[in-house]
Length: 149
Image (cartoon, rainbow, N blue to C red; front, side):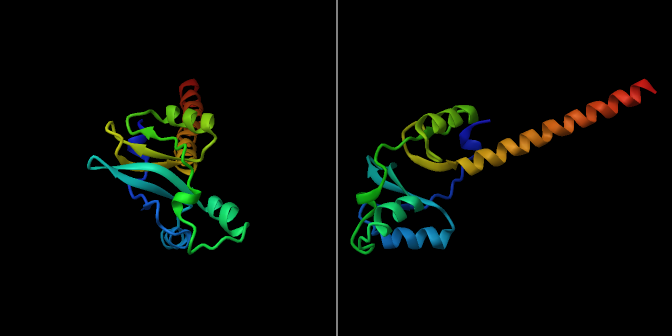
């Protein structure tokens, strides 16, 4: 299964000049913990950063900065890890663990933003797959009992 098949295609995005107040309002309105900072490059929407709810708290609220003046560009993570939509799920997991991030913007082959995959998405997928495997064990035991009677 590819990352493109499981990622969320409804991404909340902002430009660098969006205020942190606006970013926080979008997070609340859409019930998300991050926004992807984008810019246009040669007619493509390209991710250039990410702002998480933790960034807002640690960088702005805890330091008592003015949320209406500080921008997404001021606090965004700029060394952005992204994953291609064609990458496999385990490749995405390895990238997340290697970079120590919980969220990865998903891009197509040209680098255009097409989605986002989160730790929660991957945990839900793996839990579903492990559930299916556990049912297999029980089914196998029933099959064996039926054969041996």
